[in-house]
Each structure stands twice: as structure tokens, then as C-alpha cells.
Image (cartoon, rainbow over all chains, first blue to last red; front, side, top):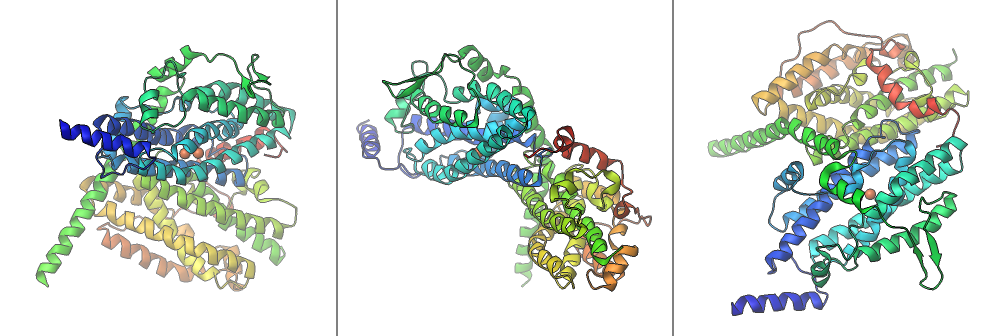
Length: 318
Length: 252
Ligand SMILES: [Fe+2]
Ligand SMILES: [Fe+2]
């Protein structure tokens, strides 16, 4: 008992001193569980997030745009890989994590349960969704768990590139024809509120925030990050000549922040519960890829085993 | 036809091959059998699109009608596409994709090896860059041929079946027509007749290691190079060209 108490104290002292927790260090079970939940959720988001954007690779309007989009979606796959590896340092394997995604036990970011209906959606996702992700991930580069923080440093560089690329798509549309401008405005109308929801429930509703702040897994609250995002994004929309679909949005001279309208929390919880427009399709697509890939993974393992056996047999002869 | 126009027409064959195959491979993005292979297929697709851009830009220049890479990719119809039939075949399952890739890579590699010494300097420089990439593609597809062929009973059966389905499309790769012969005469491109042997040797060696049979089928489908395609290409183009067709003349 005494011993456990000491360990806990040493652990929290380390965190308070802003030192990183590494895989071999002692950590409370709850800390480990929270991290596994959060990192795997993050990894799943990268992977499921490939689907809505992947939907436009075959229809990208120029070769340059096609290459950029394909490379971007591939980056997200890479992010998924780093993050699964980071989660694995906590003593859980990728296969288990993926099963949890497929059974619905693990969540992923709800934003990817909305459909991509036009080319402008690819711009809007880069600008808003990668933009919102950056707010969160920049904070996470300072998270207390070493492998997670280091994965984030790598990922953040690519995310800011994605965001610029998305913004540039919209800029081109907004400087283009009437139809293109409408396409851009329509995309903003559909993606704005879901993007604000990406930061999660408001601080007073959030179950995990307080403990996560204490452990320095999170270093800013959902509402703080959301505000930061709105403040950064509104001027960018103005520069595009697009209007944010929020009649209550206004600049507050005193606070130096934008005030914005109430988020539709009913919609938020509905999508979290699996009732968003694409929840079923997204998970089905992931399960299909996984199941149809089973024989390929088995073949690779069988072949690797045969090779090893042959090598051993050859050694014995020699 | 002037020589430069003919060279332009020849480049369309090369550029359309990489474009159509790149487009096919990109369909896997987000749906691969395992994350690492999803990334690998996308890498190959990205390489092929890069090659496409160089080839179509150059083809457009030689044509001299001011057509850009995008005009060529997005505003030509089926009958104007010059890719071989093999690359436009649908992905099928992972075995189908691997078999198609392997049969094409084996040819692509030999072709580029020659094109590095093409009398056309610009084409030679594109080929040099491409050969590095295709060396990797061929290694990837060969390794998977072996893994699937010598893996489980299921994988062996699937890859053998894919091979049978696709074999008919290989003859077109090494059977020259008038344009091919003319390019060979000018030293721009290889004599395809001379590529046939090394191609079959290369393919057979891997099939051997993979414990696979070379398909017996002797009937070889032709037509892609002169614009007589399978029904699949029209659908691929309809999807790929959608925005440029629905909203003509805009900048994206
Ligand atoms: Fe990402
Ligand atoms: Fe991203």
C-alpha cells in the first residue's frame, strides 16, 4: 500500500515537473487506460478520415490536385500508423484496437460521419477539419506521455501543410466562377458547425477533461481550443469572401474574442451515438477492407513462416 | 505526320498507361488489406501520376496545339486514349491488382531501361527518373506474386485465377504496330519484338518461384494502343473527368 502511494506520488511529481512519462515508467492504470482510449481514438480518426476525402480522389479536377489529395490521404494513413504504434507502447496490439473500432467499442472523430458532396468539401475539410485538428494536436505535442507527444510533433508538420492546401483549394474556387463560389459557400455551411463540434462537449459536460488536465494529457480545455479555432478561422473566411453560417457570430472588443452561437448538442450526441449521416457506411467500409484483406494477411504470414522454416532446414544441412 | 507529331502520339501511349493505372491504384486508397499495403499501393499510384504529368506535358508540347496535361487527361474521350488494355482492367481483389501490376511492371521496367538511352533526350530524362521508381514497383509486385503464390492454398488459387484472367492482355505490350516500329527505327523507343523474350523470361522466373503456372491461353487481346478499348475505360474516364466535363473551362 505504502509502495503504491509512493509510486503515485513520484508519477505525479514527474508530471508536475513537466517531465515525460515513458513506456517503461510506472503509471497508474487509469492513466494507461485513458491514453489507450485517446490515442486509439485518434488513430481510428486518421484511418476513418481517409474515407470522406478518398471519395474525391478519383474525381479530382486536375492532375496536380489529384496528386496533392492522394498524398494527403496517404499522410493520414501514416498518421494512423504512428498512432497505433504509440498506443502499442502501452501494451495493447493493433489488431485488438481495430476490433474495438469495428464493434463500435472505440470511437473516432464524428466529423468523418458527414458526407463529401462536392469538390469544395475537400477544400473545407483541409481548411477546417485539419485546422481544428491542428489546434488539438499542437497542444498534444506537449502531452505528458512521451511516445504520444513525439508522434504529434511529426504529425503536426504535415497537418499544417494539409490545412494550407485545403485553404488554397477554396481560395481558387472563391476567385473562380459563380458556381464555384456557391460550391465553396455551401461547403462552409455544411462543415462549419461539425468542425466546432470536433473539440468535444463543452467543459461543463466533459467527463474526462479534469483528470486529463491534471495528468497533463490535455493542456487546454475543449472550450478553450474551440475559441482559439473560431478566433483564427473567422478572419480567414472573411479573406475568402465567405460568410460563416452563424447569425450570432460577433467580435467582442473587450474580450478580444469572437462570440458565437450555441452548438446543436442534440446533433452532436446523435452523431456520437452512431446516427450521423455516414456512421454505418464508414464502419462498413472499414470492416469490408479488413475482412477482404484477411486472406492476404494470412498468405503473408504463411509465406514468412515457410521461408523461416526453409532457412532453418538449410542451416541444418549446412 | 511529322516526326514530332508521331513522337507526341507515342508519348500519349506512355502517359495514358501511367495515368490509367495510377487512377486504378488510387481506388485502393483507404481500402487496402492492411495499412502498410494501402500506403504502398498509394505510393505506386503517386509515382505513376508524377510520370504521367511529365509525359503528357511533353506530349502536349510536341502536339503544338496548346493542350495542357489536364486538357489531355480530362478532355479526351475513350477512342482517343492510347493506353494498353491491361492497365484499364478493374482492380478485382488484391490478387487481381497485384497480377496486373506485376505483368505491367515487368514490361514497364524493360521499356524504361531502353528509354533511358532514347535518342530523344527529354524522353530519356523522364525515363531515368521513372526507372528508379519502377524498379521499386517491380520489386513490390514480384514479392507479392511470390507471397501470394507460395502463401496459402487460398492465396495461391486467387493469384493463379487473376493471372489467367489477365494473361490475354499481355501480348499487346510487346507486339509492335506501325508507330512502335517507327519509333524503334528512330531509336526513340525499343524494338518491341526484341522485348518479347526478356519479358517472358522475367515473368516466368517469378512465376516459377511463386509456384504458379504460366497461363496456357494463346489468344492475345489487342486494341488499346490504337483506341479500341474494353468497356471498362469509359467508366473510369466518366468518373475521372466529371468535374472538367460538368463545369467546362474553369480553373481549379
Ligand atoms: Fe492526420
Ligand atoms: Fe491531415
